Length: 134
Image (cartoon, rainbow, N blue to C red):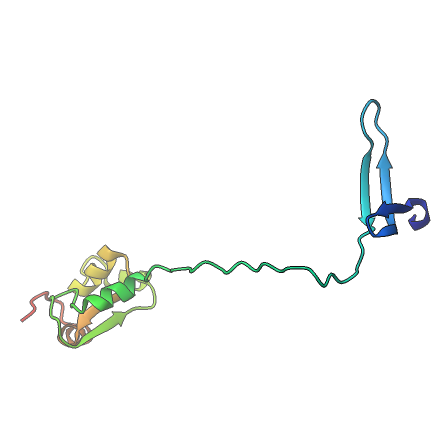
C-alpha cells in the first residue's frame, strides 16, 4: 500500500517524498490528500509570537460572600462568626415537619452551610428549638 501511494512532489525546498491519494473527478479538479512532504529543517529566522493569556477572574463562591458580610444569618449579630454545616440536605428530613429554626432556614436557603454567631451555634448543638435570640 505504501508503494502504491508513494509520490514525489515539488516544494519551495526541492523535491520531497510523501504519500498521496488522488481522486479524479469529471469536469472538476481532482481531490488530493497528502501526508508528508514538509521539510523538517530548522528556521533560524522564525519569529515566535506567544500570546499572553488573558486574566481570568472567577466569581466568589456564595459561602465566601456570606462569611465576608460578618453577620449571623439567624440573629444578625456581628461578633464571633462561625459556620454550621451538615453532610447533606436530606439529613434534615429526619426532623420531619417539626424542624428546628436553623434547619428550616437551611431548607429555605437550600444550603448545607449556615453562617452563625457563637451563641446561635451553641443553641443549634444543644438542640434548642425556639427561634428566640435573647
